[in-house]
Length: 393
Image (cartoon, rainbow, N blue to C red):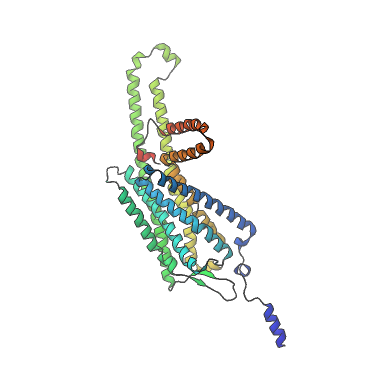
């Protein structure tokens, strides 16, 4: 009898895998493949976009302006996010077991949180800086020393806020479950919930409010200036038309119903309206992109924090991974919205690519590139335009 009990106990496994004991949709091969492809694209595109911003800013000194320092700060935080959050978070969410040891368990949440806070703080700083340039052009602008101090302060504040993220993380082992688990071990649940609310306010609500208010004020100011310029164009065209009315012959009136001044006026109005539309789209995209990408992640975190019954739900990991994936789209969108729509970055990118292609292909490529570059610069040079600060949009 004793031998039979001993044999049966040896057949029983010492532990079981979490994914075998509690399977969920993230362990389905199709869903794993979809997440792998999406995360891989975000990882590659995010790194290429942000590293190219870092390279161009460091290489070309005239790109090291006050506004571009905030963009540089944003690119650094996005690169850190790509290197830490993108590879490790989906692995931990799919396999549920922590493979990376105790030091990484402490460091990764701290580094991830800091990079996310710096990214959102930098977006707020860019919005405030553009607000001052457009809405308050006569106020004392920040110099390079001032903007460098602000950038460093953003990192310090982010580091301080994220200290609990690493402090209360620990490696835990559970009975009957194989492997180690990196989990939060807060001494008081109310403190953890309060910290979650603080993160929600500081990382999402405050930056979103700042961006919405600043870009709304910029939009209304630019629209006001556009209306004034349209009015001046109409008045100027009317004066030109009245001054040249006596010189227009009857034949010209029959052949062409519009004078040259009217055609110029129409072209300038169309260009001004097109530029205003472009600015509106960019400003709206900046606010909407931030809200759409980060809102699901914050809602999922808040609901899980205050409704512990959801922890046992089989779809919890799928929801949190989807929300995290959506939030990581900012790593790809930020370089495009805040750098590549800027004519200076675009021109330096073409110049850098031209240098590399010329080195490989010889002087034959030079003439064709010069023609393209001339066209691009001529497209960016508008007869009727806002000031340089407004053109940055």
